[in-house]
Image 1 (cartoon, rainbow, N blue to C red):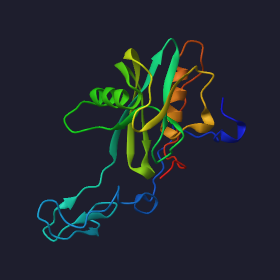
Image 2 (tube, rainbow, N blue to C red):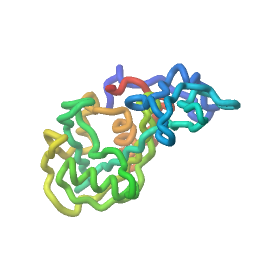
Image 3 (cartoon, one colour):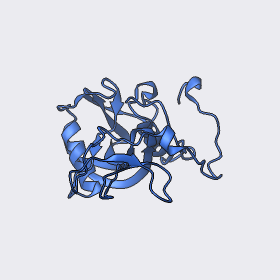
Image 4 (cartoon, rainbow, N blue to C red):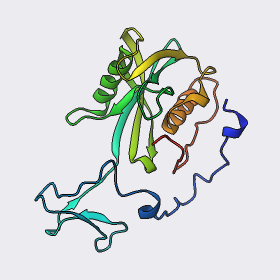
Length: 212
């Protein structure tokens, strides 16, 4: 369980999704903002298009450079009822625990990417199982797809981006040392799906507080 000061106030998850001032609350840029159009190499400037709700990067010829969220894929590797987490050795959130995962590459499926990232970060060979959930970090421009995975080989060893790989039981999760809110949501959903556990955790639509 989380300490009392980590509990969030109840929310109406069945009500209307709040309309946010997206252009003000969530930045247009994801990473470094491009200065030139990838189609024609002319300079781009922010401009709100007709019937649009936020500024886009547009060149003089009218080409739009879209800045969309990035897709992250990851797993919760499970063996004998325990889940393996990896302690990050790189920023953001160096020193904190995370699921093995990373950005999906072009030309691979979500399941392939999740398996590749798991092997790269934990040295574990896994078989991708059920979907645990899809989680958003709007302020960071990231959408995460998280799968449960069965361990079928390898051994839990750290790699270039991790310093430790360790198994935790459902009642041993280091809640105060988790790297990202998406991991907290995924772990809560995974635990809630186990026999005898409670209802699913419903993450906030708009979360704050992750490392930049």
